[in-house]
Length: 265
Image 1 (spheres, rainbow, N blue to C red):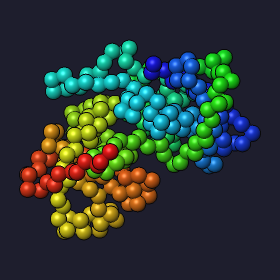
Image 2: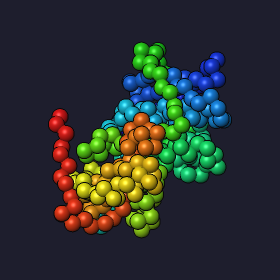
Image 3: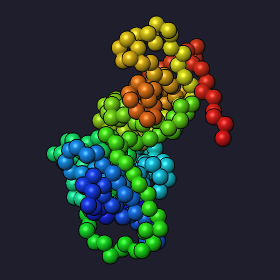
Image 4: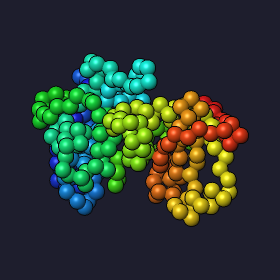
């Protein structure tokens, strides 16, 4: 059942919120969410942090689950019907605006990008009802700390978990003839899942990258889609995991490619 209900409420600590959650009817829990001490809209950030922890980190609906599934049909991508959508019940109406990219609070964008891309298309309703909360929620308590952004993560062959950058999504969107952000997320996921080679980049190219960016990333290639993906090292962008920095279409000759070895289970 793809229904997630969250209810955020303040505590005596201005930088910590309690977010009760329920997956369907039976499974419940409580997240104690610590938010940055500076800035405004801490309640919204806390609720976004809880949604990110449940949907992305824990993957309560599956690690590959999106707000609305997509499938290939001919040369394009279409969405399944409403019955397959993720159902979100939230406390703050601002979250619905952020997901629909209608919010004027741009400082919240780093915390909501996963909603505007991967989980765009979810059915979302706003409610302050708390009658659904049961005592068993207190048997499943976790503490979460929200950093400067909430990353969406994908499993990259030969790399492991990596964060999807805003730039990579936007490049897929622009080069895909005006795809929506949600469609661009499905497309980059398809590209990433089919990466099977690494491009043998020259030492000269590596030096240019380091001079320009301060680091040199890994150039990965999908022979199925003929798309290239550049993965930047975590230390290059001061992140906890590597970052899918960009993606672009370019056919590569076999002489430039080295097969990505699958990691043993």
